[in-house]
Image 1: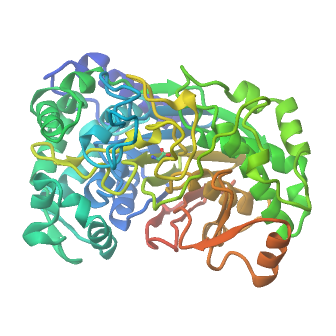
Image 2: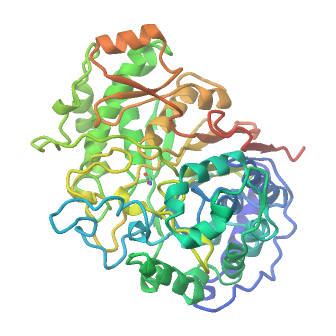
Image 3: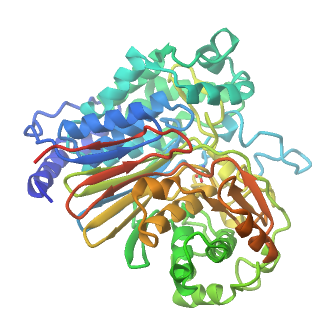
Length: 583
Ligand code: GLY
């Protein structure tokens, strides 16, 4: 695409400007003395959960930044204006594609070093209520400060301060509380009120700030300023780390400054696969999301999903049956160091063929008959799904780079503790581990021993940042929604690559979900016509209706370089923006 060469050259300069030595504690990141040669603005597309964050990303592209610069700026803006899920106190994953290069960045949280398998159980071995979801005992070691920094180091083009300063401005000068934020605060008010430091900022006078209020976050602004000057070391040592350790200890947590200092993000080999003629890349372990998307696509190809009529009960049935099997296999997964199976086994031709052959086109297979692996005993527990948080952003620039990034605090506002002196929420990601044997997690996921709590381990995720491409066309997409992330993402991908939908249409189509256990289809209220519902029930499916499933955020680059963006109209329309830089 246009200007590719100059962008690659500038990328190389960025490596020189931010050497690893900049990362030593207390050492300021010197603003680059090599200006980015006034890079020309280029086309681009930004989609996120919040229009203000999207505008931040567009401004970065307008100023000559690339998709990596914009992704970091949008993620940081979301940490300010979308504190439900945007974060510095959580983690995430990113898949980046530039030309032939595809990379996967893992900045997933880790279990603190003193974490144990029984830390959420009482003396009788029973789960302690809320221990893995509320309060800092539920918090994993945050990965976002390092993750965003190394993404910029490797692929960014603008000086670091330029990508941090928009979020700093939002925190310092204030932003308008949206109805969505107000509603989220109201729905979590009881949890937030348990922590005086949280209530002070988020429940002034005992209630959340009204929609339309201008809200300033001075402590977060101070943290962002230190982050801008010193990089992640500003949060992994010094006063911010001390504040996190103090707050954690005060509320029964085990997170220490030493845990923060020891955290490392990991560049991983992306999970690469194909489906219906498209190349696809997503996140490998410790996310199960990429594998679920990959296995489902492979099974759907085998059962000739594309030959069934769009919008038919046949297609819904096949989707559900492939998910049932992919989620059963998820039971074997965990941190790559402890997993009992990986892509080598679960995506092998033999295994996919065996799984697909077992699908009965006329009848639902009860989940009780779908074992995770030959000889594996089935778990007894059946989960109940609760609402889920997380947020996704998708960005394309005109230089041929796309970034698909999902970040999370797990639940809205993470563990509910807003750290005084640091100005951000800590996650409750520990609930993504198996915190009590046989007990489903927040998302109703029944998980196996590979995902037990182990010091330093990464908890199994479902986040599925996806990039797919064919014949010069590229899409980047992902979702929020816990266990619903891979199923929502896959449905939108299929709408695009099998049905040939427009981007917004693909995102807005009603969705369904199934995750092996509990053995039920969850369907958005308008997803199934009475005829299709009756057909699925006749095949033996149990169906429950629900509100929105996931929040898919996507961008697409057409072969001629035109960019498109789509935010999810079922959640927060207006988070999509396109930049056309002109001829
Ligand atoms: N915390 C949601 C996930 O990682 O799947």
